[in-house]
Image 1 (cartoon, rainbow over the protein chains, first blue to last red):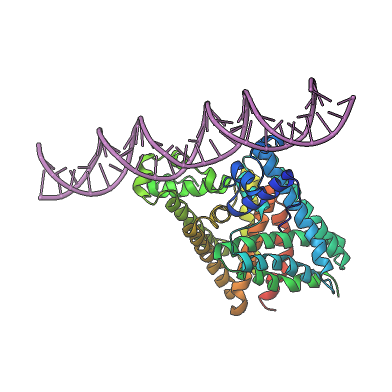
Image 2 (cartoon, rainbow over the protein chains, first blue to last red):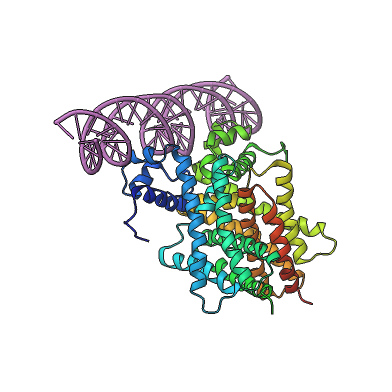
Length: 196
Length: 196
DNA sequence: CGGCTACTATGACCACTGTCATAGTCGGCC
DNA sequence: GGCCGACTATGACAGTGGTCATAGTAGCCG
């Protein structure tokens, strides 16, 4: 965090994602986004002529790219890459954040899906794109670890689904238990899929 | 659905849950809830003096009880109860709804968690209670199927987490693929936990 | 009948939201 | 300098949200 060396436009997208993470799309007001990004309010209509919908969509897509890139970082941090290790690292990012900063925030893609899947078609598409952007590197990593290509994508879907749900339950319970539990329970299945 | 033989109070709680399911808590206006429930607007402040927060909390708790009771129904519908069969039935409820009515709605507990976990402490507690109310019968069912007591609760957490995440992805993609995928992938693990 | 309680009806209030219109500033480039 | 584009600043607007205040109705009880 704490990169002040970005243009105001990117900062606003980032701030939008942060605020959406906390209270959903409706709770992330345009004025608040500008304030959080230390950006002038007048710039919103300049950079995002499509209005809030455009800003939200870019925030969701940004989150998808961020999650996708994190996969490579997680893999680099594992000396002995296994499916279970990757999943544990993905979950650990959340347990660490929750331990450090509390349970205020969740996944912005999930929030946008909940708030906009029925009303905002473009935002729903952005969320679908974000999930795909996230799932692809996971599936590729699984394939590299020996998971048959036919199952890699399915297991990536399983991992992301389970992680998203565990994030939800963890926030509701204010406890990382769901996150640690799903890692422990899903681990053997994931490693078994990577072959002998 | 379509039980008009309930009191206005219960109808409003039900309608609130329905509207929260679609667009989140913020999108479910009080006036809209009353209209959806065919209930007088003036009754809102009479039955829910605690305001919207109380109404939302009751809707979330109602959803938790509903989900918990569904578990018994699913079990009754399985002639040969297995963990996988239960999970498949839970997911099938969603695939069937999505096939019949489209992907407009998700889980109200998830929506309330996303929108209120950071801002509304009482709603967060209601969501935690709802998840617990849902998880308990699942864990008990698993235990009855032969899953060791020590693992039953963990597997129930895994099932609910995975289902919630798959619901999210399915709505985003407008495709039941995530739901069917997680059932197929998680099934063997669940059945293996039920013993030989 | 009077009186009481449960419930309904309706309008007003205030805080906000996203969006727009308009004007202003700054910096480079001819 | 003069011009022009990019960006900023600010106030207004129309709409909507939840909530409150007040008044009204229905039905039962005595």
